[in-house]
Image 1 (cartoon, rainbow, N blue to C red):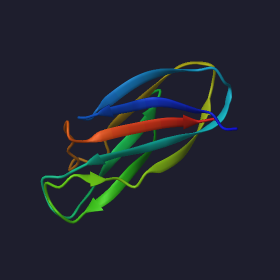
Image 2 (cartoon, rainbow, N blue to C red):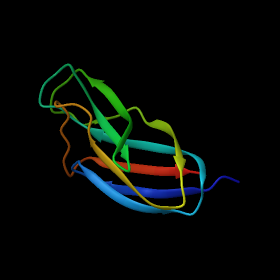
Image 3 (cartoon, helix red, strand yellow):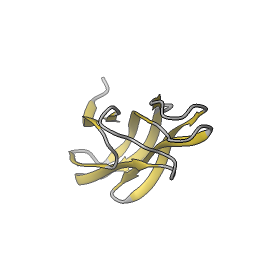
Length: 111
């Protein structure tokens, strides 16, 4: 049976940084979800994901409307974990991305 470790489960704003401890040395999947918004219409907006300072990818969405919170398309990102402490950072993926306390973020590690 798969194990899931909750790494981030909180409101914004971005950036959010959280440290977690891995007790495994193997491949895993990182699940990222959340919401963001933009002051301007017709913008690509999203959440960039970093593991130990290295950019892994982004969960994004194209927003046709301005000043409306949008759920990004959730992403599964493959990662190689080593035993020990690691740091996950969520930050705006574009200059048009805005977040505040009305946005919620979740990061899970699926083993």
